Length: 224
Image 1 (tube, one colour):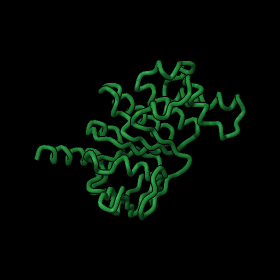
Image 2 (cartoon, rainbow, N blue to C red):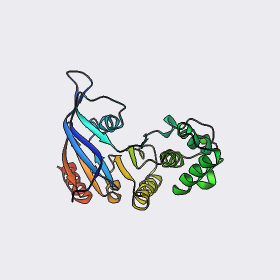
Image 3 (cartoon, rainbow, N blue to C red):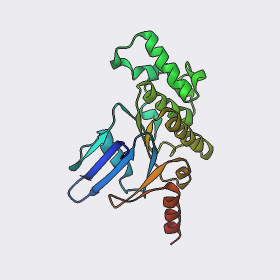
């Protein structure tokens, strides 16, 4: 029996202009309940592909599917944390769900507990570190009961130790909560924590599968 996919991309084409193609016949599938990464050089189309999957951009051809509700964690968390305190920011994402105040509080506290930041419930957003802000962005998706989360280079602005802590946190959430994650990165060391990976080049997925094999391939290419 084939495993169900949480994210499917089929023959996707996208160009900023007729002379600037970004993606060409791009296809991939991310299995439910797994942590996959999307690798590629700068300009290979990784972030554009993620935005197409999320519906933030419209493809020129092809189709995308993602299980809903889904979350999106940006490279810079300051672009998506809009309320003054941690609890208020997470609760803000629940406005449309018509929950009672007690239900909202339970969702907020449960999400914060999942990312090990329950003690920061009343903390002002401005007083958080970069890694803490990214965890709050993840908690916002968890509070909305998202089963699929897209990550657009979430460690790009973090130092080495904080970067590893964040990727380990997502690995744990995928394993313990059954989440699906698609994580865009250019850091080879992050491949140690995922279930599988895709390599994007010239607008197409040219390799996929076991992350350590892909890591070896990328290391060989970088030395040639």
